[in-house]
Length: 352
Image 1 (spheres, one colour):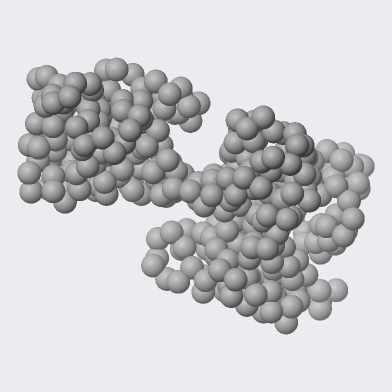
Image 2 (tube, rainbow, N blue to C red):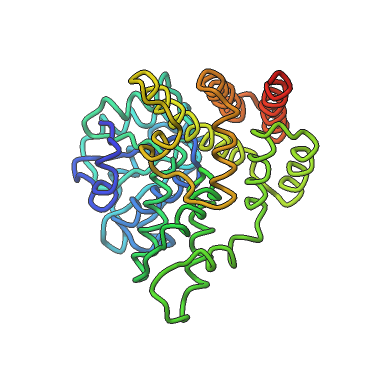
C-alpha cells in the first residue's frame, strides 16, 4: 500500500499491525532518516538495543535474500518485538522483500531506507502493491511543509512564532528535512530560558542571520534586476560561505511563483476591465508586507511580464531536475541559471 501525505503522521505514530515492511524512499535523505527512526521507535524506543534492533545493508541481502524473512520470524532473546533496519537499500533488496511477503510467520517490523526510487523501481512497486507492505514517499519540503515544521517544533516547546519571523525563516530553509531540522533546533535552543513565549524576527536574525542563506536575497534581487556584476559578487559570497545551490534554486522558484501569481491576477483584472497591480497584490497572499523588500517585489513585477515569468519557471524547474539527476556540479547549475535569468532581465530593460 502507498501511504498518502494525509496519512503519514498517523502512520508514523501507529503503523498498521498488518504491515510487515515499510519502504521509505524519495529525494530528501534527511526526511527518510527521520521517518525511518520514528517508525523504528514505535517498536523499540532504544534504537541501540542489540537484542531488538538489527541493522542490515542492502548489499548483504543481495547475496542472502532469505535473511530478511528469517529475521522477520526470529524471536528476541530478551523478549519484545524486534525491528529490522535495512539501509542503504536499492533494487538488490527486491528479492529479499518478496521472500518477506511469502513468509509464514513472524512479528518484526522491517524498515527499509530505499533512497530516490523511480516509479519503475521494482522495490517501490512491490511495496505499493502488496497488502502487507507499505511505501512511504519523502520529498523535499515545500513552503507550506516548512511552515508546519517550524511551527510544530516551536509549539512542542510551548512557543509561538511571529508571522514576520516565520516568513523570514522559511525563506532561508532548504528542502532537506535534516538540514532544516538542525537550523530550527538551533533557533529553539537559543530561545530556552529567555522568558518569552514567541520567536521573534530578531531571534531568527540573531541565530540564522550569520549563515550563507542570508545572501540568497541579494542573489535573487540581482538576478531579477539584471545586475550582472552584483550577481557575480553575491553568488561568490553565498558559495564561499557554504550556501546550498538547491536552496538557491528553490529561492528563485519561490520568488518567481509569487511574481507569476500576482501577474496572473493582474491579467485577470485587465480582462474584466479593471487592471491594476494594487488589486492583484491585494488578492494574492504571502507577499512581502512593506519596506525595501516590497519595493523590490513591485519593481520585479513591473519588469517581468506574465509570459516571461512562465518561461522562467520552466527554466528553473529544469535546473532543479538537473541538480538531482545529471551529476553535474550543483553550484555550476545554479550559477548558470542565475546568469540566464539576469541576462534576460538586462536585455528586456535595454529594449525598453
